[in-house]
Length: 412
Image 1: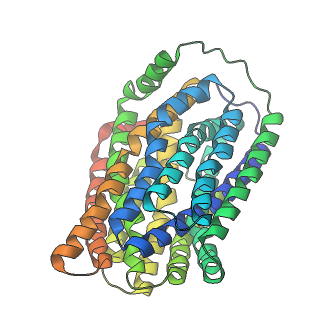
Image 2: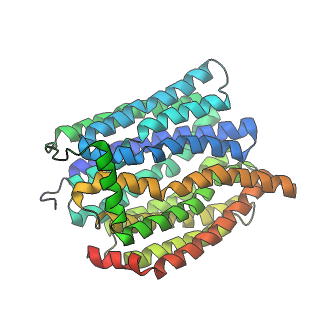
Image 3: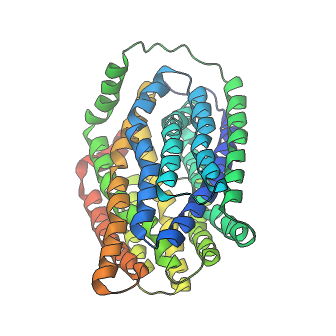
């Protein structure tokens, strides 16, 4: 059902809360990456922590989507944001009692991720609840900006804080942001009349409905499958950029470099937030992903922080265009009443590639470094460059699929 009234101001309040949460989460993520690499010197260990932080979100995204269609989405967001602090608190307690072991860090990020899994489908479905169709593109650009905050603001802030304190301060700040996020969501919830939920289907049946919403639309299914392949290649850069840089630079340099790179996402996110994309979504998607792959090759070419920052900036500049197009093509081809269930399934299928990347990229980088007798950073660079080439080839294939191009005609 079309939204009859815009609630853009409520969306902005909700978005502000998620922006704050992203910054806090980015501080913890950055701090843990540096901490684990300094203790182990292994890209595989960093990948393991990232995998365990991500896996619950992936596995629980589908049932979380069903819950988003059966219960108040704002309440689910508050539970997800609030209780995800428990895992961070656990790691902090371990560190206050001495050094946190790798297994303790893994337990903490796993607990946090379990509760965070409730957030994404409810958040995306709430955006649909609040906004008109004409506002989707601009909202997507702003959501990209909030998502980029963990790369844009958090790294340089974390680098500065680590220079004067230690990782425990980053945890304390992150924990405090959860309270602010829950409050902003509660305010939005209070200002929205909760519609009576007519869907009385059993949980299993609702789950099937979410899958059918995807499987019955061949173009949407193919787009999601291609997206899963793409996230595998892009995940390689995400997980290996830190050991690649830390192998020849310190944590402060890493923080500055990550911020510079993420400025590309800010620039294009701001552009999309103001202008949006009016047409040619599939074409823009393919072009942005092709050049993202090219920049990944440049990112790993040389051990030079300026070259890395340049190609990293260009890589991140491509992502909001790709995400905007993916979001629009899927959102406008799924009925509103199935949005929660559909986004849960979409989140699961499209992000399987990250599991492969997080599980294998670090191991591959360590293996290359050992076999060629080079640093872990050079091993990581080789994996990143190979993934970039494959991403560009996938982008070309995507544009050639007729069922995917047809999605744009259906949504117009």
